[in-house]
Amino acid sequence: MTAGVAAPQRAEKALAEAAERAEERLAALPEPAVRSPEQRAEAAAVVDGIRLLRVRFMDAHADQVYDRLTAGRTIRLRLGELVEAAATAVPGLVPTTGQLAVERERPQRNKEGREIDQGIFLRAVLRSPLSGPHLLDSMLHPTPRALALLPEFRRTGSLRLETVRLDRRDGVAHLTMCRDDCLNAEDEQQVEDMETVVDLALLDPAVRVGLLRGGEMSHPRYRGRRVFSVGINLKRLHAGEISLVGFLLRRELGYISKIVRGLVAGEGATWRGGVIEKPWVAAVDTFAIGGGAQLLLVFDHVLAAADSYFSLPATREGIIPGVSALRLSRCAGPRLARQVILGGRRIWATEPAARCVLDEVVEPHELDAAVDRSVARLDGPAVVANRRMLNLAEEPVAEFRRFVAEFVLQQALRLHDQDVIDKVGRFAGSLA
Figure (cartoon, rainbow, N blue to C red):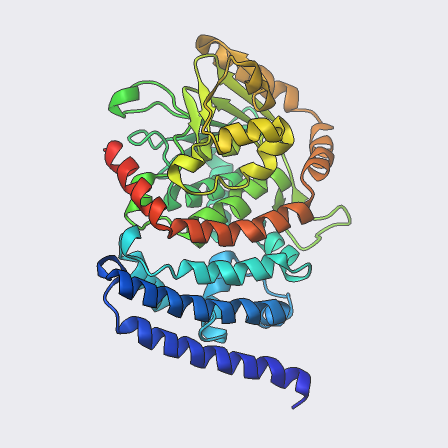
């Protein structure tokens, strides 16, 4: 055995042994929510120690670990598959399936914070100029669910999922968010459904343009009105049902990235490449809050009703608003981006400042006709090539990768900070 091979093996063995000792010490303590201040301090010291070892290990061996998990980058693993494979291949590096299952059953306030260890692992992978691009590219492939549904959708032009409806009409894929009882609040099911319908819209050759809009609500406050999205489902977050990998990171690297960069439908099937891209339009009714506002920043044309607004209440919720710091700063400038993200500024569609995000503002009764005109304008042979060049100029993949690498760890830390737990509990109660 060469010294180069022995070194990571020794480091893995040391990490596994240290992780086992840390787990024994944590198991001797009460559950997080009922620990005394002294016990919380003891737990923090334990996890800080083992996490320092994990950071050092991944700093030294990220590419070796990733290559082992992906057979030298010949296998395409999605985020969930990657962290699951890492838990088996490198004991002590990331939480096991069993440990995550226990966490999943707990409300947010009573979790051990094991997703932070996934954040450490994924940050190192994404930071690597070798492993990171491969992972990003893997996430741009169509999901098995979409591939299974494609023949039926191509035949019927219609699909109703739990949270989203997809209809093809005259070459336009109409994606309608239809969580009518909760103002299109996003959870893991919606991320799953949105990626499925985005895949289908991109895979179907009869679709030339995609359109995203919110459906009519049954929620008492907005009954009968269309609403774009209220953002993350705070009730689900409070209950511990919003995960780092399955929601927050999959959302950014899955369907949102596919809207921006297209779908990888093959491994370079032709000399033109295997990426399928199409133009996208978003139409905002009533409001686009949080994750809803984040979505607007990646569309080619955004329309809004004159009585609508958008906001990113990240500071109030305590979490990071996705990739908005990168995208909003680019299109609105750093001062306005800080006012919106740090200060919670709400921007009405009719304000001059709204033009940094909204392309067109019309009276509510005129929005349908404006949407039709916008879709028609983007339905041209040169649009796809030009949007590709604009996206490359505005958000180079390497810049996006570096941003997301830091985002994944910082968001994991925020999810389990006490101030977030307290804030989310209050917001979830107010939305009841």
